[in-house]
Length: 480
Image 1 (cartoon, helix red, strand yellow):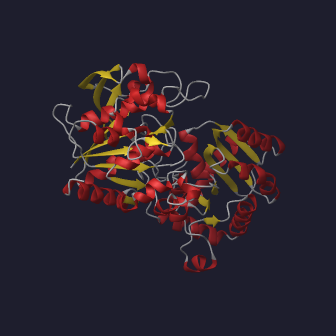
Image 2 (cartoon, helix red, strand yellow):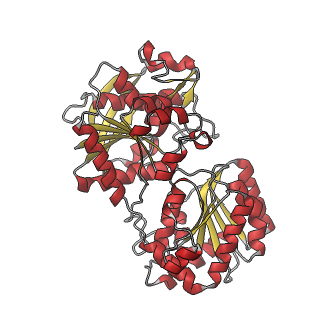
Image 3 (cartoon, one colour):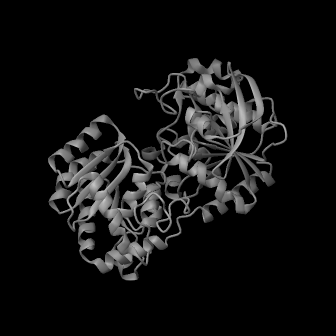
């Protein structure tokens, strides 16, 4: 089976969050199931710099008003189709924001162009290869099934994955003419959304199957609390909605062979984590004592519960814990966490930005990772924590609920606990979870058992890739 995957970011070429990890790992995981994937990605400067010996596969002289070329190149085991359109993607900022952190005003056109290019490839315009199915990811490529539905070309089966429904790609109605869709596409059945144009909404209406990145999140987005205004649309498509939990690339995230950490180790050599712990202490300027190190690797936003963490940082320190925080995001939250580091030197350390090697080292050297998200479609950092023996302390929501077994009395007795869940997602709820962790940390036998149990968890893409392959096959066999 041939599949065209369309994504705005793919690891290892370009990454701002978990979407990139999924879009990079899933095509590789699908290979054993006979799925050949080509991944269409924008030609950002970092992408153009990384690819080697690209081959021109398709010329698009007028892609929503700008010339573009589709290049093909293999990189890190992935077959890429790169949309080389300098007017859209050759910019000095990030994929979505400029150097000052503001959204590009033409993001609607940039990602409509990506989607239209995907639809053109799906229609067979690229010589020598046509997919059997198209898999779009999030709002940035959600217009692929829209273009396939409304353009006068054959419509292939399509899957749209919702990685985070909070990001919807909603724009003013004045952009509609620039999308070059027929007038009747601006309707409730198409892209119209409360008088605006909704990219994700249009994809939800037109894709043949919808997936989310965990079973719990699939249920949550049917509710007003988590559906972010789209719960009605999703409810109308509930029969086509599937919750398939994300996996991770367990070759890249492997503590026994990870080149990014100071000392490799396994579940039978957990004492070797001490070397990595020392490096974390040195990097974050933490006191070298026996108190547990709680780490955070996250976007520093309200969704991720970073305001809750800031509000309890002093209590965590008073309990004897230490905090190592890596991330960037809301300036006010960054400031609150840096202020906590200033008040508690040697107990709280903050490193601004995102650093891939450091994120690996923190999982390999810290004792627990705190993930207090108010909502979390799936989450990957808790899966990395399991893999590395860094016990996850997580809010009971979305994929965090699906992937962590809480250390309640029954789970501890059965020796199946892999972390700590808490609810409600409040400052006191988080603080109570940390207290539980501090208590468990005092019993090294129990803590080590939980580490080993977590490291035994199957967090790979194997089972999830099998579910995706089965979904693809069912859509293709019935012609969607």
